[in-house]
Length: 445
Image (cartoon, rainbow, N blue to C red):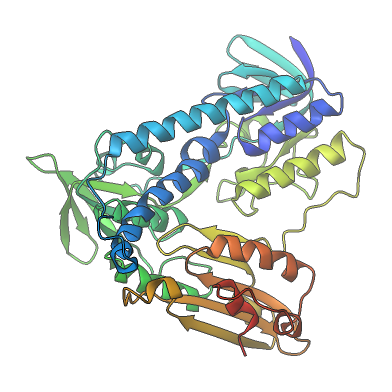
């Protein structure tokens, strides 16, 4: 039996950072990853998604270009293999960066599926490790709705490796992943339909934001089918997919993407003594320690925001407390900014208007809806939306929301102000950068 101070199961963003930081504290660290280093974010999530998001944006740029005098600038045929292979090359480069970073820090990397079998005992292949501490950082995996014919659909992981770009696609789901791929596919020239159970997509976001996003997606040619859920999928004689819905409708398409969420990879943990919630998430205390002493969990295994920066921040807190001796280290989960890279993109920080009211705030809202300058020459109907949610009693801004170009970049800056307790008066007294979209946040009255 081999020994170590920390055994990290999972080489995603959280696991890699925890391993690296713990090794820097002098710990003997082993990290096990069954696929590629970087986890979901690097391999089948944030990074390749954003690259595809950029690719999809060129068709919109080409449509606007003639109005700015670029008569020879036009979108040609989409060369899917070129995009896919260039993306693959960049991901391989990042895999190598992660590996070098770990090795330079002194972390021992083991390739394979590790299993926690008892208190701080980990099996991987024929090897057994006794660890002083174990960190569970396996992340999540796509969840496929259990309907007849679900094997005929693809999941989000598969989308990054399609051999052929389809001419039509139906996406099932109304969350982050579904909307992002709807924008990507539509931008790449695929006739795209988005089906979801609710009246509006993006459950949990500000309702004004949700309605505006749905309207803007429709302007961009994406077909939205709210309150529609699939009941079965079958393969036609020519290889197409035929979907049957709960409202007795039927649709035939070339590809079905099941983007119905992700679930934590917790198989076998309950047998090792780790307590799981009803939704499959790991039960852990404020120090990220599970019911098994010395076994910790971070990232998408927990009931915390499923965001890469959150996982890496949790990794930092874990190492600071366990290996750095800082028992005061804590992560503040309030006012965490996030973005959805759909078309158009949206971003948000703080509370929605609905959440603020539910928490007892007396709110005042400020709204700006306008056509951006870059769309005026083409007389394009696209509109940007910005919204501030303010505590009416003290004037503190408790939420900022945006749908439009550069939303993620703009909200990142506002997140600092909101975390520091900026008031609406602070926003109003700030001079805007003109002409810019961002200045709208300091000119709303």
